[in-house]
Amino acid sequence: MKTNTADNGMLASQRFASLSRRQFLRGLGACIAVPAFESLLPTKLLAAAAAPADRLATTATGAPLRTAFIYFPNGAIPAAWWPANDGADFQLSRTLQPLAAIQKQIQVIGGLDHLNATAGMDGGGDHARANGTFLTGVRMKKSATDIHAGISIDQTIARQVGQQTRFPSLELTCDAGRNTGACDSGYSCAYQYNLAWSSPTTPMTPEANPRQVFERMFGAGAADERANNARRRRQEQRSILDFVRQDASAMQQRLDPQDRAKLDQYLTGVRELETRIQKAEQFGDIQAPRVETPSGIPADHAQHIQLMYDIVLCAFQTDSTRVATLLLAHDGSNRSFAKIGIPEGHHDLSHHAGDPEKIKKITEIDQWYVQQLANFLGKMSATKDIDGHSLLHNSMIIYGGGNADANRHTHTNLPLLLAGAGGGTVSPGRFVRHGGKPATNLFLSLADRMGVKNLERFGDSTGRLEDV
Image 1 (tube, rainbow, N blue to C red):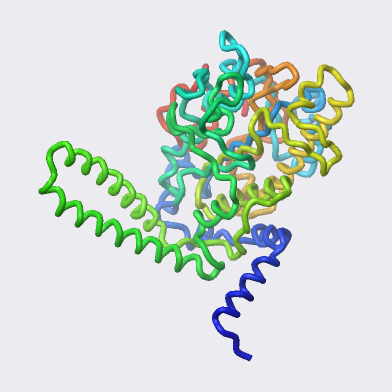
Image 2: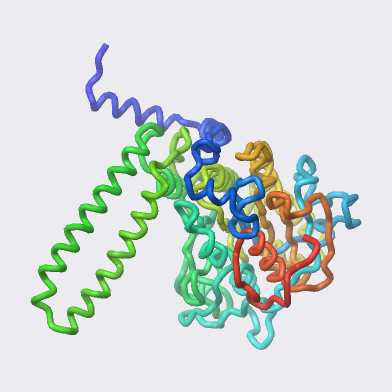
């Protein structure tokens, strides 16, 4: 029996609408990283495999190195976070128990600080400073309108290794975004809702909608249509650019010097867009995972987080990018967790003032966030990379927050984990105490492993972090 085009479209819509989250996640877990097969690797990456290991963000086997920075809000309960003993024989704490299956692939990092997040002469605003300082290591300018932070470590890395992939970096959030207005004691909302900064005054606004991210990376439409749609979009962009260039050339003769300067500035933007298109074309057709596109932002927070984690995994697996940030929630978030029996707001509870019941609930929230991380890292560990190692082995995943003990708004001995082995350059399976060093020292060490050159200092760093 034949159906008309409208009927086919309706059936397709119904099939898409009926797609369950379980089906989508199963598809992501099974997505084939076509660019990561050696026979299909881009020429540039094959050349990187033969280059000295310290020159590019690749392992000695030629597999790419990836790094991600994941932020959880409002600090942690220190007594429930830190293991009782250090070294390789450490016992996971209550909060970190969900990581038991991959304990040998994580490193608990103690004794790292962000002193530029402390109050100093600036008074209140610890949540804004915690967020804004986390990946920059600098002191925020306290203003709702005149923002000034610093370039974040992810963008510092992306500037040198980002040309090796279709996307220099990926910025994600599971929170609503705000870049204007005052949010915390006179600090701009931009500090509190962004992790990545491309310049001291320019935050990289993260995307909260998994559908938007997925389509930006792999194209719109069904799995078998994405490559054609992406190719058609590039052709349309080229046609538009050609038209603009011809029109501008004809117009230029009729403009006065001031307007010519404006036109030149405009054409600079056109040339930059053309350069981005040319760069995308260098990588050939997009090798997208054969999974359905996510439908949008789920109502359930856990589902939202898992979708974003899965998109990071797919981006790394397909070598779409090697640098990612994920803001699970902004510091100061007052989200409730009624689904795990905690209807109170997270931030309200974090000011527990020693109340045992509130401490118990905060510990459960901390553990809930770690459970979401464990699900993600488990998938990374189960995913094979080009060299036979796991995707997690060839990655460095930082998980942590800019507040330590949220009850007191401290920024020393931050709760931090480093998952993955950095292609064999990192030694996981340990709890290491570093005794009061800047967190930016760790970032310098990670940047070295990612192939960043000539970075002598970063933020308030005092040197590389040893014994990572």
